[in-house]
Length: 112
Image (cartoon, rainbow, N blue to C red; front, side, top):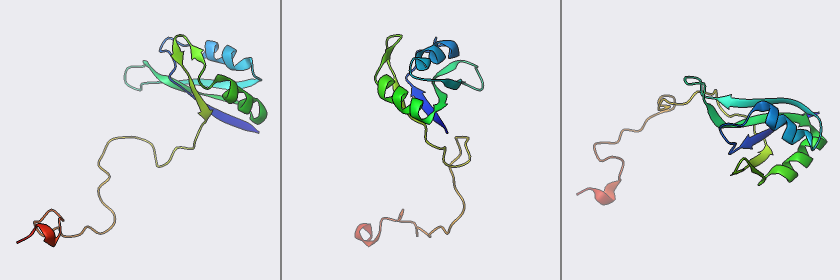
């Protein structure tokens, strides 16, 4: 079974080939994806590596805290994204909103 590994604090000049070579020292790498900014195309300093479950555990143990290009890597099993992606917005709406009665919901302690 494949596991996805999060690799953070990457040097911005790191390439997918360099990351593949680094992780290949600990097992067979299925894929490498370095994340870039949608608008500028510049690297965001993190990415994901897919490896077999057993190899992934070995790689995480060996490479978390590893110095790569002058930066200390953060390596751990990737977590599923929560929500529907996309940032921004205030998330208002849904649920009932309580009338604040002009007191900013501070309660009677701050009233007269």
